[in-house]
Length: 359
Ligand code: PHE
Image (tube, rainbow, N blue to C red; front, side, top):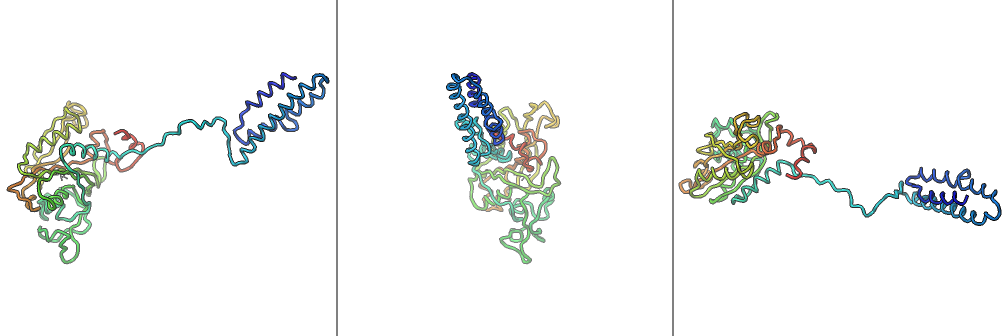
């Protein structure tokens, strides 16, 4: 009997009590009227006198131990704790906190601004709600210019009825009848005008920001997106400077083996105007679905700043020349990360966003 009690002593010690239910089980098994301890005391009565002393002591130990354990956990649970895990290890490191991640548009915008910062371009931002003058007229797109049809515009206030002068188109000089020709900017080229009106060359800056166009939403187009505009105006800025700057950018962004190709194009605010393609970095120009088999993908529009635009901003076009370019951030991001649907950028599905954690 003595050995049996010793074994039970060890058992009491080891029993896990983590919940109120387990404590009640413990009480029923060990301490209740029909429990183990009572049963042992019954057996004890039948022992021979000479054994009683020793066995009695161990039996009392067992009873006290069980009672003490019960009291300890009872107190704990009455103190408001629902569970009292004996496994709790206060020295364990805490669970890692889930940090958010940058939006891929911010990631790519930062990459672009970093690359241009390294070659001396400063970064400026300006308003998204623009007047007709800065978004169109000053950029050599007068009211009747067919190139205005190139862009579908969201108007905040209706276009001016006639004329192309700064007075007629600027909200600084509202014609009778109130504010006219206020738009959600259709491109960041409006910031070129803002900057050239307010400073004289040398100007070497990029202008990132959101732009708006009245497009049907699809996998390839959205009614707002982001651009980065570039502008460099100084004495003797040449076409070679433009080409070298864009080659540098393309190789930093897409890899040092990247080649660029320029195709003649048309923008009223640049002359000559070009569209720039890069050699397809996905297939190494062998031809793939991304470059539609051609080996080249378009990334931006650019050109030498039209002297008329310089004059509109009171910059002497006999003394100064410049280049400008504009690229879509979504387009660059879609190429770089092989994203096939522009809408993913605006849905903010965490499963999409969290993939850019380390970008
Ligand atoms: N603003 C033009 C566009 O949105 C891009 C561009 C910028 C072209 C600067 C030439 C120079 O398509």
